Length: 234
Length: 234
DNA sequence: TCTACCCGTGTTGCATACAATTCTCAGTGC
DNA sequence: GCACTGAGAATTGTATGCAACACGGGTAGA
Image (tube, rainbow over all chains, first blue to last red):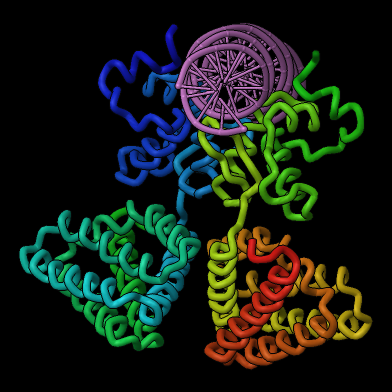
């Protein structure tokens, strides 16, 4: 054997990022599978099965799972295996509250400390999303939405808060995905963004905070409405 | 060998928490060593050395290090080993800003949603700290301070925010520890707490937010003063 | 028929072995 | 004297093996 997992790389992804370890790559791929819904919440994450699937041994798989465990995407129960984190209705509510607060904080900081260039870019991004909202393409809007919120995190100029917000966003991704398909949600979302952008651009910090908090709260309402309809109370 | 690490357990800690894995225990112990300053920032964390020290093999050590890596206490550089996270002056400032914002958010939520019992307990805790501040025992005050802030996190009734705040607090612990020894800092700290408690007890949410933000900002100032004096600019 | 126990099977946790990279430090050429 | 090179050592990343625990099915007993 030349190198662990060499077969896989040679097979189809030899230009894979070189400086990363298998464990990191696996953590990314498993996280991706969870976020996109390919691995449903509650699914068992069998170490050997994952190892076979990715063409590695159990060791890097275990390291990846433990890493995901600390981010909250995966629940690792000692000696009882790992499962994709089950989020109860209560936990979901707490996640949304936390995300709302952190996003609102980022918006307030952004209003205070975004550079003129960052403000112009945020404004342009918001304008571009108007077209997407009108066209009614949920997937494209969702992608732009991620960029939009990311720009606000970045504008807060605080990597700690930004990382936390991104992590929360990822954990909530599976639950938020569907709400963009609700009729009229895109336009309303864009309008809510408008209030946030206006406040940030003019440096009205408290208003930016309030507008963002309202926006996330409304997203939460949409999601809860969907969940109540789809799966009872989970 | 009957079981990995069995010798260690039999040797002196057989009543160790049974349901935990070695990796979890190690993560806790290493984190403790970092937080208390036994492992200084920048120290190399040699896997084999840690394994020998704790009487286990490298496997659980690696899992623990990766786990600590995602919490930010340790920096894991692929193929180049792990070191206790070096915090630059800029990062320290960002950590304090983040902690201030999150603590302030918790204080606001606590003002809105603490139960009467929780409010009474917070009040009692604050009263008890008056004596500690007067006696001038920095260690005892620091311990009570952790409990005090923990009570506010808990009062926010949001595990996500609470965990994040606790994590930030731990990461900043080494830097905050010394400031309680500054002359007069205990009394001032207690006075700042007083403003927070008064706002929370009477449900004035915005005021609780502002008071907590001010408190943390003042702590940051103390720490920065100390650092500038002690280690240049790091 | 139900409950309790036992044992087999599968899975996890850890130790160990080996491969591959990075690091160290002479030795060499300029 | 100094940078560069390359072998050896040290250290990390991954694979593999083994023991202990968790879970499930079957059997004995009430």
